[in-house]
Image (cartoon, rainbow, N blue to C red; front, side):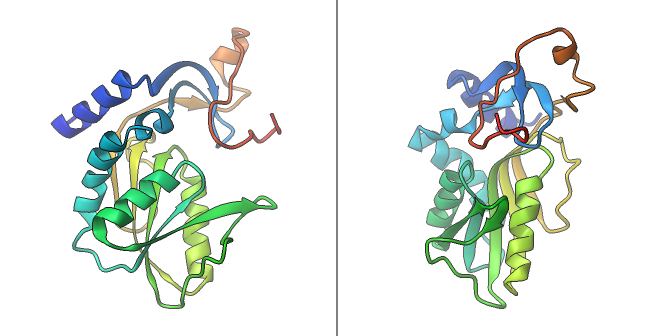
Length: 196
């Protein structure tokens, strides 16, 4: 880890945002570690400092708008857009599909930066990328705070994460924590795939 990553990890530990236990991730996979970014981002000074890394990385890229998936990415996307003086919108789930609501529109040819808080499999980000493309717009890049895949997820656009960590996750069938009978919890913002 570099010095920036170490500083960010210190903030996560200080705010008790890096949790240990048995967690059901948004992807449906299980893990013994969970990044609860909301516990960090509740402090505007940390949000500003962490998002500055992403804003600095993309400051010379040409784009019009920042978009993120609701709900975890909203605080991140809005802060990056604020720092770069760009428009900000977010996508939400409706009938299990990422969509634009609340009067948000993307114009054909518009250049869009996609942002998120934590990426494990990249599922929500891939859905937002598809939404951008379906509207005839162009993805300028993808910025996010935590890359739980340690660089394994590739969005096929310029991408930047503030911190990369290898956090192992398991399918329910392979999960050693399930096999030990340890209760699984779902701390995220979205219901799990089995509706819990």
